[in-house]
Length: 392
Image 1 (cartoon, one colour):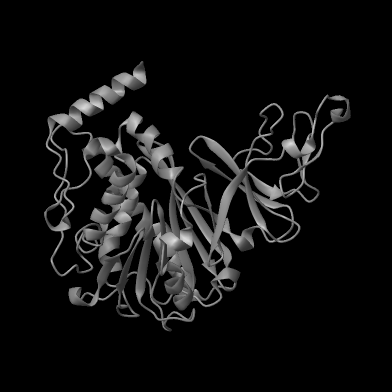
Image 2: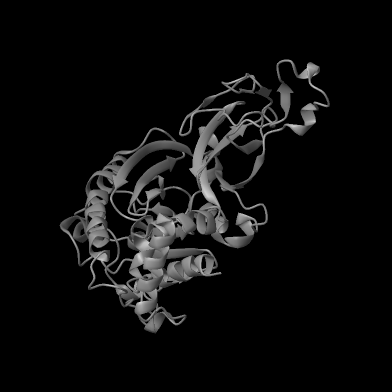
């Protein structure tokens, strides 16, 4: 009853105001405000967007040994990702087929060297998901172990990063994100062997899409807080030198580096990961980003874990070819995690509060014909992708 009322109120709000989103980014407005706070829309999003897309789980080096595992929450499901004895990385729904007990604690990671054992009745499963043993099963009529394997989830690896999808019919990530692996491998030689060297988690009072909107666009960089003005000194200030390019499910922003003695943090040598020293951000739909900073010898990952219609966890993690970080890389990680990110979060939380105002429904996207790095056509592409999933 409550959900129906909420959806009805949302439909009234959406219908009462003209939807000014357009397929032409140069005249388009943003998503309507209820997409950022409505409970029913958020629930629908979990099944229509997140359960249908590829979601980042971990890097392959985070589960290097047989039995190493991590878990991921997705659309009210807990997913177990584990390395098999033949080095294959597999994923399963984290639920025992006997009486529905979860096999491992959601959010946990660790190692199951001899297999997965249910904590309730000790049904034991091999790393490939097949049932190894169930107490007293020999006394049960027509009981076949082959009928009670764990339910698998699709897994795909891209440049060493492990992704899962609950959609058994989804096109492969490689087929959707054509060219993304080429860009990452060009800029980061040997990326499949990188290790996690730093991570920061932020509990944020905002819808996950506000975070992604902010990540995609650079219009605010020289116009917002003091840390952003420092950051603008890190990259080229020449508008015509930077571009945002949109692809089928991903967007790239590339801008030349600014001065080594910039006011954000100083570096003396260009980035040495095998590619160039440009500032690069990549958004992969729905909620993941890759970032390369000038002078920083690490690849940053940026992703959200939605926890409610107006809350999420923002994760920034750093992967590098060595755990021995140089001083410029340490300074860069500190600046982006401890100085710039808190200011971004404050800006995003201010947006979230404003989205609730009766004075706001949609905002005009600032898109220029040249599609420069300060244009918001990347945000338009993101909103178009959201609408294609939600309105299909």
